[in-house]
Image (tube, rainbow, N blue to C red):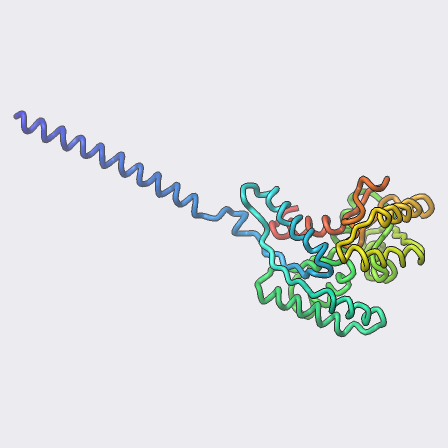
Length: 280
């Protein structure tokens, strides 16, 4: 009788032990599953392809901003999925000079080659880290068959959202003088675009290529840029200013001028992150 009681108690003990162990194993399995399974944001994030190096001074800013923005949206240790092809700027600047004289063959081939490399690397879309070279956006989209997120559209949307009607445009000579940038801003987004005079344009262009692209940021150049912006505000009615060269934000910040500043590097990076994460 005593042995039977002991046997029954032992069986009850074993049943309880097995039940508890099973629950713990299931719990551990669930925890392990939670750790190893990627979050929805990770699985849905698109890979951003950047054509950089034109110049690499601003490409650094693109990389930094995109990663900071993704981290802010997703938290923890999240960062952006980025592929960058960095063009050698010494050779590219020579191609730009040839293009300015009317022959765009070399520079078109360079940009198409860069886009093809990014597509082969499985980038989902491309941003061209240069305002001037966004003049090649339609060509790349046509020849390489990959979406190109145009900096002009991203900027035009931001200015339109602000309610500003007349905006100053600063950039390279090509950006300020040609229609590829101004026309969409005016016709698509209903803006009145004003540009510096010829002397001011030459000064801005020189600072971009001889100083900012070489990583040189001088107070005297900042002061002159501010003077130009203030003149466009006072004499041309500009209510804001587009920093239409991705190097100019290295020199000019919002606190330097009295009207809203539209930093195209920041705007373009933000648009790319939103597109990559399917957010707005």
